[in-house]
Image: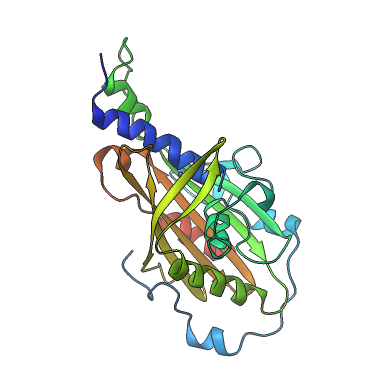
Length: 258
């Protein structure tokens, strides 16, 4: 059966979403995006960065969160910032956060991904049609990155992200599989209020000229450690609804941070 324009847009958006995460890596409670909790912002003690090995131990494991399958970020995420290029320097911290990389100046970085378990698996139809495509895209995947900083490096990294949201509101470009993908708009959002400071933003991505897909990123600081969260919800892409980052993932991950 020939796919409808809706299914085609959904499938194309899925590719863009994965490109955004892999090559730029494509809750109402809490403070506004970019706001720090006053006590933490004004009196943060000098800090020493954790190592990458330390951060890997802080990533969520399968036994620590229910309803998600945890996978290593080794095969699904960029290994270094050299793989993540933007056409505007101010936008690089946004792209790094989306890719599970450190948004600031540090080499201490670790990442993994969590896929929401399906409650049921429908039997796929014999033919590859629109229903089969939409069923295959019923996946919500969250990329998580941890990074750690010396001194006030974490606060500076958060400021770089917050400043980037403002500077890049008109969008930016990044390479994806040899082609330049365009983020058409960046919008500040209200974060979860987790940790000591939260910056949240959405990115509107041009989907091969067929439409726009919106993706959400949240960056949380706890002391001198930063956690980044980026979710691709393919079911939401199909329905046109916003793809929200699972609150359970943010809550569980931030709870493990020092």
